[in-house]
Image (cartoon, rainbow over all chains, first blue to last red; front, side, top):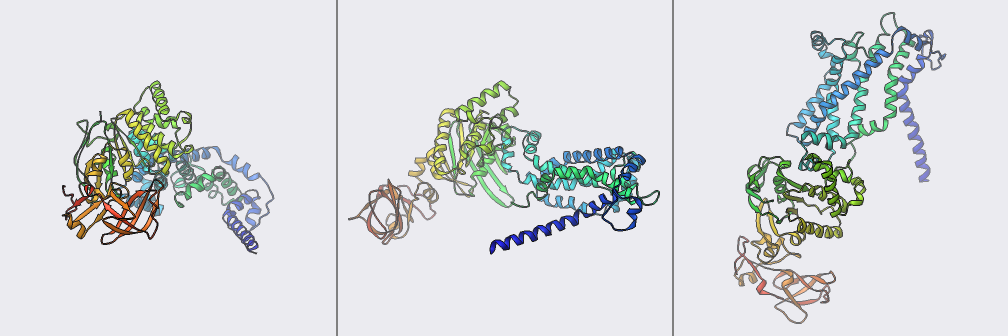
Length: 274
Length: 334
């Protein structure tokens, strides 16, 4: 009897989990479906059966160059992530291993900057970018995205570093390692899983960032987010082409996410369960 | 060379005075054990010597040189941690070689020293393994190996055996003592286990609440404890303390007699008591007795004595081995 109940529970739970997963995945699925519809089909109303044309992908690629924004996305997301790690590793090291009474406050303050609506600082940042000649430049955008994601990177690394026994770092100090040797030869290799998942998550966040990437670029530095947006304005809305462009924009990160899901799940739940 | 001198060393954590003020001399080549109950400041004292904590006051001298402000690496000391603190991502070879690499030694020198250390510590077959693939005892030996390749002026051990099982602890105790005889280097060893302290030390430093209660050789502390704390801490099973008329008749507030200094008999004796618990260890038996007019007493007798729960036995204290303490718990001279 007990066994029958467990099996029934298992089936219910599985069906429920699938439903939730499908619900979350549905927008992406619908984008995919719409991208292989014709334009009249796409505006006709809700339908899950496309005619299966690849016309939109060809049009998108011939109308606009896909490769350039793709490369911009890669450079900006990877660049900003590496930059963030270079700054965040020593910062998280200091906070994890030599905390002061104010360390928690600093961490909270860093996180609080993420609670501020980005639009609140749009004007000053735009003006600064204009005055420093950073508008539509990859460098400007890389620095911007690095700064935006830095709090999360520091927080994630801090959580990881806290799990590393302090005695091992003290042993390195006794063994004659200087500050940098301690970070490079001992701390970083031990934190590789944590650093890897932080890196992956940050690349995804940077890749998907659309508020600043759209507003601070026009053509030269425009990444895939701007590429998608560019299909929505000039000649009215073309849902099918927009969907094709979106699919092309999210495909690389979706593939990256798929192959690294183990790392990501570990990264996001790390330290949550002892 | 490895003499260590502490002058007026104190340590304060926030409001808590962990170590009020300590003066101590450790001479070159000595095996010194810091012993005391948990929270007595013994590990803090070791970490102050290592340089892993900054002193709040006073000076630390190594070979006469003031190292109070020096970084851990500059003090020429090596430390073995309770958790072994091996580098989990490195092979045994690289763990042992790490301090030499940090000192930028030649590759040939590193290889030779690592091979020598591995041979001494029976680790030659394990050099390519990771720490996670080793047993607790082997890990501890790697930690010691990492310490000896540096040829430090002194070794610091922070409760190195407390994570090992009892049998292995006995073996490692011998290995560390043996190592000390071979290397003749100063060793400072922290433990809460008075058996480790008694068996290994040349000199024991008994600590309590951040203060030194007594410094001396193991037998010196055993025979002439300076106060009640040391008397109760050194020796196992612990000394019996007797107050009341018996102590007063000996001109003391408290009288102390060790369990092994009580003669037992089934026929006659000075005191008479009832056996409450008999712990049979084989060679010895520890009897926990309720003695008439005296109170709870622990006595050590031959394993063949054959006392059981509820038996009435007679005890005779060896009064030449009696310890007497005054109102403040300080030992009275005979």
